[in-house]
Length: 375
View 1 (cartoon, rainbow, N blue to C red):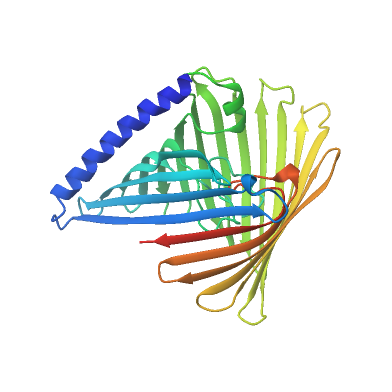
View 2: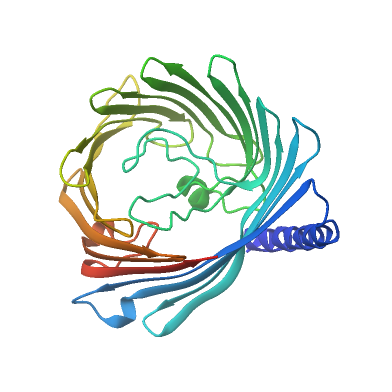
């Protein structure tokens, strides 16, 4: 309850700041150095099992208005601000579960030719993987979601680009979302995390090194250190890998090693058939002792463009967990765009063990429908 009250107070403050900024943007709208963009996305997402009851079928009606301000303060310096609000209505069957509005983005920007600074609620993601992302630390992006929705994280991040093409970014985060933290840290404190990432160009590709430390300040139960390496090389085929090691003194299984490898290729069939295959393995235990708990997944995707407005997508995930029969999650979809409209219809089969995800899908064979209007 204390954490919810704190977030309510913070959101009220942010909405007040947003109102002031919108008012100022209207006052200075005729300034030639100020660029104002208003846009938004209205969408409906529905998933329904063909054999299950309708009252288990989730429907989300959502509208995300977005404001972007850019101010060219000098020939080489630009200031900016991004704000977006997620207003949604979530229901199961014909029963309303939740209707609410939350900040989706609230970011102040500072840019020069070699530097970027971002402060506020923002999206931070990295790594070459698309489906089985070892480095999916701060976002909820799902390739099966045509709208690519993802909550943000409150952070201050700086990025510097070197002449060699390399870049480094450093960040600090407040109360960053994490499954372990959400379970074991139900207090009124705001734990602080710090981290950084180096990306360095190599022949035909890029390598990255990432470090992140959780709970460096604040009374956080979850105190974890992460180190990761990733690499992507494009030759005849695309190849990439992500490897992460994490350690926490507060858990029974203190160490985790996660790794994945991926490959993609576009076959010269018709308009081009793009395919990608990824596989990952997770080991849990204690370094120097046994690492008994092993889980792994394999994912295959394919996309085929039918024309300027239509395309087909296919995904199949295979999840292996100790003591559990392999779980398969196939999904085949058709996407159509027309002007500002997007429609996506997919047939899926979701095992009970894996039901849910960034888009809630009921277990069993079912249909997923996405309709969106962008303005």
